[in-house]
Image (cartoon, rainbow, N blue to C red; front, side):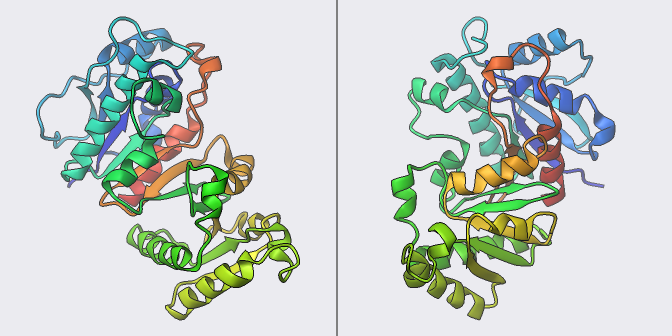
Length: 322
């Protein structure tokens, strides 16, 4: 029997990433059997493990092969010089979190891992480290153009047309050709992971989805033609629906997914419904990437009170989609 190989990056050493990873892995009875390889600074792992009083064993694993037996392993990617700066952004922490993430992605790209689960990073730390990517998804998109940001929970599922971009830039992507290409890519990706989604509900761009042109024309000139063309190709997509009600159509309907046009349009509704258990998932790549839907939570880092449920769900979904 072959067990899935799941890479987990520790995230920003100054945030709650190491804590939620440790707490999630410390409850193996809640996880399917797999080969878990944690990537990060071993000193950060050990310091958090000791602070939490956990006895989780993860022997150091060297080389470029993945162990065949299920269990927990650690790949030490190094990190900060000295102790991690907890509770704030720093360039050293940014370098450490990127190095772990980069190594996990490289392994996945070579086919050594079935999925990568990423603990939260600080975008400011990445910028202070001199990195040009805003975050995980933008780095993945540079390697695999067309990577799609989606969000999953038991109650609600959302896909984003645009990701971490200014709103003015997101507005420019509401175009017929861009939308049609996105519907095609999303449909292929969902089929590839056997997601169970059989209807895509597209949120409108303007209030009341434009009110037949009275409150904006994008729905009429760009969105409806793209949706109609996709439907003719057999893609189960409909809309555009008023943005303030479309989430109600999908809430508690596991077979439906909302397509939001920009980041906050999708994430406000999603996090209201599933902040503690939601999962950020990147589709459209040769491997699956998942992540908790929360950030570094610098304000509670080191206090031992971080909720690991979103990380636990991210690991479970990575295994399921693998």
